[in-house]
Length: 289
Ligand SMILES: [Zn+2]
Image (cartoon, rainbow, N blue to C red; front, side, top):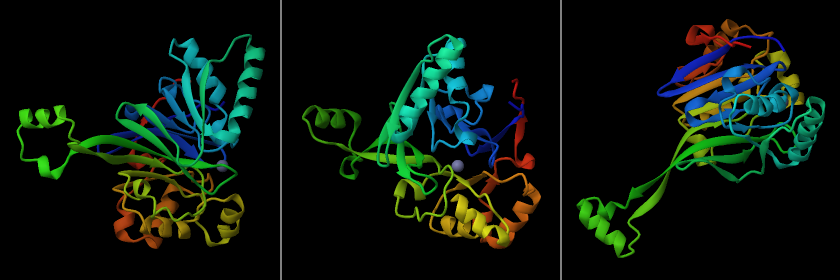
């Protein structure tokens, strides 16, 4: 496996590390939320992260799965949890079993099959919600959502003891509240996500934009990837504070991609964009592999 360094960017108080080049490798992690979207070739920095959220089974997004799970055991971590489209689970199980036989060991794994609409509890106040994308059969995206309870407005003037008393008497004093923090689309062609409130209002949107040139419109369509023309349309319906762009191809220089984005996107949108692999906006961290 080639060794390369991961990008590290910070948007507000959320740190994102990863590597994403179309067809080569895509792995994007948010360590403080304990999630890694897709696994790429399982770079060392993501091994301690407990949850891998796989969007689809393409090799550049999924190749490192067995190594991730096995290396966690080697490093003394608990078994890793992998969320993946439900149809992929038997195939992943077969791969892990085959690797186990090759390796002479058992590869521990908590495999969770998901379909759109599912929710998985990452931490007590943090869930991953699954939604459909348009890339390949069963492909999904994930939103990481903080869940809180908010005191009902009619009780906001009460003192602590008064609220405790109401609670004791069994009054429902609060309502559930959701704060969508990070959404990851994975690979997908254009979908109007504006009706999914938690996607549209996610603080951070991590989205692919694979093709930039007019002559690549057909290619974007065939591979079910996003073209810059669709990318603008996607973002116009959303209200994310930050947009992190992944999955550029090797043939598009970052400088070129930025120039195209500046030309094609509204200034308001362009100003919120960071390209994950842009060396100017990130600190490189060494991949010790
Ligand atoms: Zn793909």
